[in-house]
Image (tube, rainbow, N blue to C red; front, top):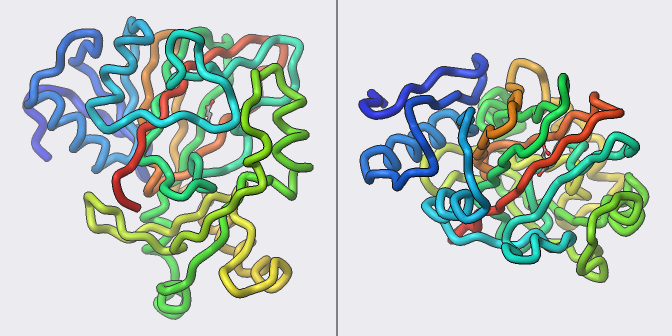
Length: 280
Ligand code: SIN
């Protein structure tokens, strides 16, 4: 797209863009919002630095893209239950979202997007890495594409490989919620067509992906392991670097991400807002 109202600078050869020339605390005109929306569809993740936003202002930006949904396993902010805080303190070793995943792929209708707003960042590290699942799909052989075309896979929050959601969440300072729902799982197509771009993506959410439908876990594992590794090769990725006041928005329908945990001894605090989808 030829952008008239915003500037769009790529983050890597694979995906991601930094947007400048916008103050998100102001009312966005239709033209500016249309360009931001288009930048998201073209780049999969967009980054705005130096934004000074209250929780209300963050919600207004996110709501332009869709209805907010709650993350099921952590209590939201008292006055803004749709926002939850991702906080790692200097004395903590575990971080939240440290395995590759696409947000809430374990729900019946996974969210279209996720917004993170940085309140406090470490002096170095604490980036989010993302990977482009369109490229992951397009680079498969025609044979594997047609094998996967009609397959579904089971996505679960149970994190069986990591000792269970209950153990993982209870090891953090998060105010956890609904852990009785952690064993829920849902089936989704592993090749999905993006409802807005029409492009196909390999819907890999490594931390939540258990098995192919109608197959046992051990039968599914070799191909799933291949796909998980394939989807995260460096050529498909970008890194988001934060400053205080950075707002990031990614499209969960064609990306997965992980929070890097390379800043022990320092604090990192983010507000996360999750934007629901209307169709898969
Ligand atoms: C998440 O997976 O929602 C957290 C990502 C991050 O903190 O970088």
